[in-house]
Image (cartoon, rainbow, N blue to C red; front, side):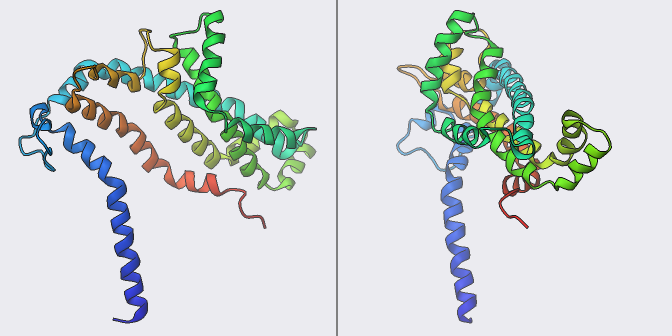
Length: 274
């Protein structure tokens, strides 16, 4: 075997080992979701569900569907609100170049550094006055605050790469800024829209800090709080917990696989200039 061939095999082996390490928690989640609770009390628990059971998944279908539905509504609402706010903002920063645009971009970067728990406390105080605690709209607005700064930066980078000649041609034809944005810029920004939508959905789908702070005692809880029904002071129902985690992971995994081509194009847009 040549030296280059040995180097290739070495890199492949290291890559497989690292991949296996990173994917082991996923395997363990699947394993525990199929393992009976009494088998989990053994030390150590088995690496394979010898006496497999689907009891955890039956409990998910019986008890967790309302939480999944709430998470879906919150996720889709967050996507709509995030795109509606960030796409025009990205267009303005990329093409209209208003005064203070650089300062705004810096503030957007700084906003992503604020810990979520601090924002949650601020939202709690505001929602307490407005009566939005334990409500789905309140969670949608809160989750959008995490996604909008990132989304504006993605749209700005992507729209900066759109040729200015197209905007000039639209202006010559009598189109104003709003018509140009709606008819030209937005359709050409499909990859950025998909990227922003995916990240906004994933952030809201997996949110726990805002959900536990702003909707902990309400009737409409997302799936991240639904899992907590199986965790008590003296009892942890690991079979049901992991089955719920598996089911909750499926929508995000499927969406990510289907949209990965658009995400790759949207994230790298604007990184290389001609």
